[in-house]
Amino acid sequence: MADWNRGQDSVDDMLDTENKRLTDNLASKVSRLKSLAYDIDREAEDQNEYLDGMDSNFLSATGLLSGSVKRFSTMVRSGRDNRRILCYVSGGLVLAFFILYYMISRIQR
Image (cartoon, rainbow, N blue to C red; front, side, top):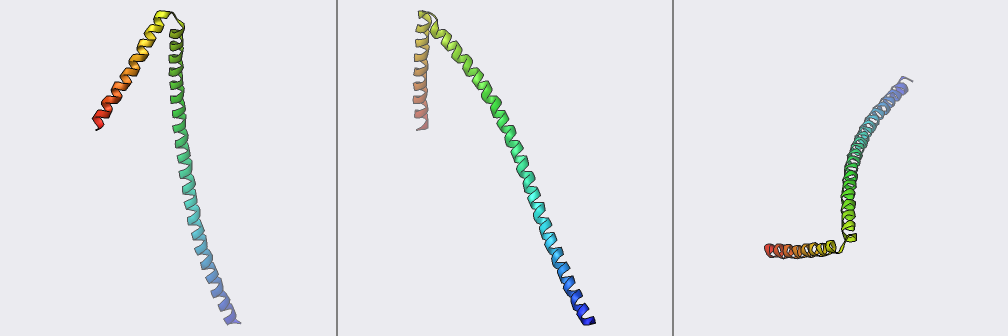
């Protein structure tokens, strides 16, 4: 009977050793998952801050563009002299664009 208990003790020791190894393995995997979850959370917070910054930038650009459109509309609705000036300014801008385009294309060659 003593031999049977000794065999049972060695089996119990082997099972305890295997359980400890599996527990350590599981603990390391849980630790890695916790680290990944923390990194994902930090990245999501950084991205949310970035998007909030972009939102405020777009709002300021929208305000700037809407003000420009209002001034342009006021100029178009005003008298004939302002329309003539508007045509000259528009033509000058188009001409300046083509001159800059030509100069840049010549520089890149």
